[in-house]
Length: 173
Image 1 (cartoon, rainbow, N blue to C red):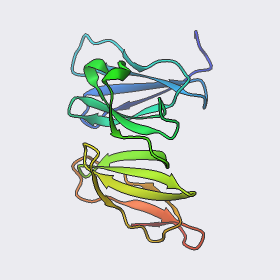
Image 2: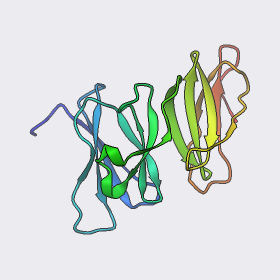
Image 3: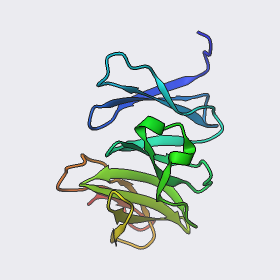
Image 4: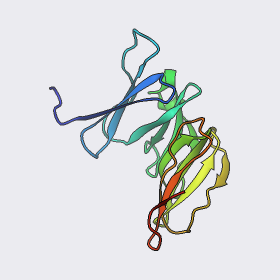
C-alpha cells in the first residue's frame, strides 16, 4: 500500500444516494470524499482534502451534505455544502454557526436537527428544523450531565437518548 498508516471509514447516506469515505492518519484530522451511487460512471469527488481539519458528514438533505466541521470554526459549526460544489468552501452555508459552546455532535432524526453542545463541561441539547431555526431546548433530567444518542431515521416519530450525571446512573429516555 502507498499509505499503510491511513485509516479508512465508509458510510452510506440514509437516502442511499452517496457513499462517504473518511480517511485519516490518526486523530490529527481527516479528508472526506463521496461517490454518487445513482450514477454508474461516477468517480470519487472530494469534499475536504488534507488532514489539517476535522469534518464529518451528518447527512444529505435536499441536495446538500450537512457537514460538522472545525474549518474556520475551532468550536465547530454545521454547514450545508451543495453536492455539486461540496469542495468549494465559498458555497458552504452555515446551518448552525459556531458559538461560545463546543458543538460536539449533530444528528438528523424525526425531521429535525438535534445539536449537542458542551457548556461549562455539561451537555445542552437544542432541537432545530433542517434550516437551523431553533425549535426548542430539550429538557434533560438534570442541568448537569452528559447525553448520548438522538440517532434515528429522518422520518422517525420518536427520538431516544441516554443521560448520565454524577448523581444519576445512565438511563434511556
